[in-house]
Length: 281
Image (cartoon, rainbow, N blue to C red):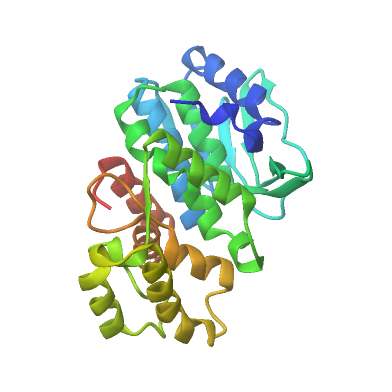
C-alpha cells in the first residue's frame, strides 16, 4: 500500500506530518481541536482513529474552546499557499486548507487544487498507525473533505480525483457507475428519472461499454438542464460513485446522510465522530 504521504498533493506537508507522528508517542495527552462542523468531524475521526489504534491519550474539544499543551487543530477558511509549521514545545500544528499541485499533465503543466484538512488528517493517521484497524476502515474517507468543499462546484477538482484514483488503485475503494450501487442516495439528483434508473440497473450487465455510456447520458440529461449539481459533481454522482467493500451504499451517499443528520452543535458533531469510529455510518 503506497503511503498517502508519497502523493504529490501532500508533498509540501509530508515532513510536518511525519514530525508530528514521530513526536506524538512522547508528547503526553494531545488535545484535538476543531470547529463543530461536518468537515471538523470528518477530520477529527481520522485523528482519533489513529490515536485509539496507537493507544495514545487524547482530548476532543470544539472551537472556540482553547487548548493548552500538545494540540492538533483543524482549521477552515480560504486555502493557504503553504502549510503552517510545527511547534515542538509543546507539540502543536494546525491543519488548514492548502493550495497544492495535485498532478502534472502530459505537457508538464501543473494542475492545482485545494487539499482539505480531512485528507491531511488521514495522512497523519496513516503515519501514526499504518496498520491500525480503525485507520484502515476510515481510509476511504480521506476524500470526504474535498467532496464536501467547493472544488467540484467550480469545476474539475484535481486533488479529489488524485486521492480517489489512489484509493482505487490500492484497493481501498471501488469506483462504479450509479446503476451498480444497490442503495444509492439520490437527494443530490432531484431531476433523476427513477423508473429509467431502475430499468437501466436491470439491463446493466447485458450492456456493452458504448451502451452503458448512452444509458448514463440519458440519465444525466434531465439533470444537466437543472442548475444543480454542477457538471463536475454530476459526473461523480453518475459515473464515479465510491464504494467501500461490499457496502450496498456509496461514500457520497453516506456523506450526504451524515450531513442531513448533523444539527450544527458540538454534541451533534461528536455523535458523527463516534459513528465514524464505530463503523456504523
